[in-house]
Structures are given as C-alpha cells and as structure tokens.
Image 1 (cartoon, rainbow, N blue to C red):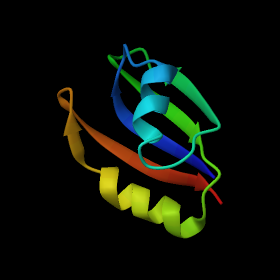
Image 2 (image 1 turned 180 degrees about the vertical axis):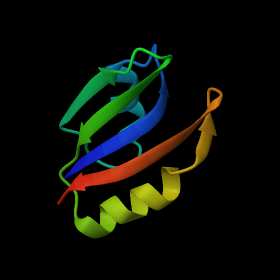
Image 3 (image 1 turned 30 degrees about the vertical axis):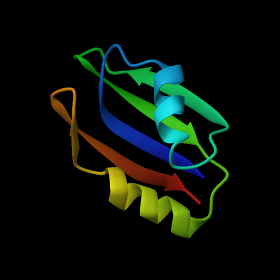
Length: 77
C-alpha cells in the first residue's frame, strides 16, 4: 500500500518519516519529494491491508505538527 503524506517540513528526512510511520505499522520504503516552498511530501510504502490504511489516515490526517497540518492519502491499494 502506498500512502502520500503532505504538510511535512522541508527538512524532513526519509529516516524521520520511517521512524514515525513504523509506530503505525511496518514500512518497506519512504521517498521524500521536496516541493521547494518550505514543505515536503513523503510517499510511504507499507505492507498493510485496506482497513489498516484507512485507520492510519483517520489517525494522522489533520494532525498539527511543526506548524503545519499533516495529511495522509491512500495512493493505491
């Protein structure tokens, strides 16, 4: 399952995202996409079920972190 995380600070690292997301489930890959305007996106691959992905999006979406709202969207399943 691929999840898109938006609202991350521009200095976010793949290791930092992986560490945070591993609290919610296993992570196989993290890719950071720098938007160049002070924020970044992360694409996180997790070997999880649809139900687990929906639970994660409900838990994390609209969390205020480092001065921004973090949102997670399911990219594919």
